[in-house]
Image 1 (cartoon, rainbow, N blue to C red):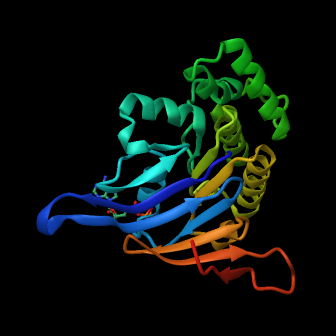
Image 2 (tube, rainbow, N blue to C red):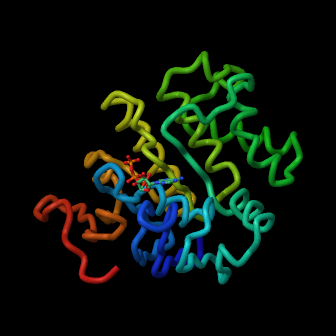
Length: 243
Ligand SMILES: Nc1ncnc2c1ncn2[C@@H]1O[C@H](COP(=O)(O)OP(=O)(O)OP(=O)(O)O)[C@@H](O)[C@H]1O
C-alpha cells in the first residue's frame, strides 16, 4: 500500500423521512499505509456500515472514499467490483468459505476471479496456506477444519491477491479466546509482512489492543481516536489529537 485510504464526511442513511436510520452521520477517517485500525463501538453504532463504505461495498449517501486517486463511488459498479478484487481483501466472522471447495481452492478463488490462471492462483494460495501453518491441509474442505483453521484459510484468501487494505468484520467473533488471539496474531502479522493496512471492526478490546490505532463510534459518529503504544511504561492507548 503506497497511499492512504481517505474517507471524508461520510453519511449513510437507510430509509426515508421519519423512519430513516442515520447509520453514518459525518465520518472522516484516514487509513495510513501499513497501519492496523480497530473500529469499536456498541451494537448499531455504524461500524459495519463504515467498513462497507471504506471498502466500496456500498456507496455512501454523501461524502467520499478516495483510494489511489479515485473516488470509489464515482467509479461505477464494474470498476469498483474489479478494484475490490485486486486492491482489497476481506475476512468475516465465519461462513465465508465455500463448503464444497478444498482449502487451497477457497484461498485461490479471489485470484482466479481477478484473472490469474488456476495454476498460478493455486501456487500462491498454497504458499499462503503453508505460511499460515496449514501445510498438509490444502485438500480439506471447510467442514473438515477447526474454526481457527478455517479463519486462517480466510486470511490466506484475503492476502492472496496482495491487497493494499484488508477489511475484517469481527474476525474472531465465532472463536474462543485463545483461538481468537492466535487468529488475530496471524492476521496482524500477515498484513504487516506484506505492508497492507488492516481495518478491523470489533466489539472486543483484546482485538483492538492488537492494532496500532483505534477509533470508537457511537450513533454514526467517531467519538474517540487513540494510538497504541508498545512500551510497557505507557498506557495501551493515548487519545490522538488529530485523525
Ligand atoms: N441495510 C440496512 N437497511 C436498513 N438499516 C440498516 C441497514 N444496515 C444497517 N442498518 C442500520 O444502521 C445502523 C448501523 O448498523 P451497523 O450494522 O453499521 O452497526 P454496527 O455498529 O456494525 O452494529 P453491530 O455491532 O450490531 O454489528 C443500525 O441502526 C442498523 O439497524
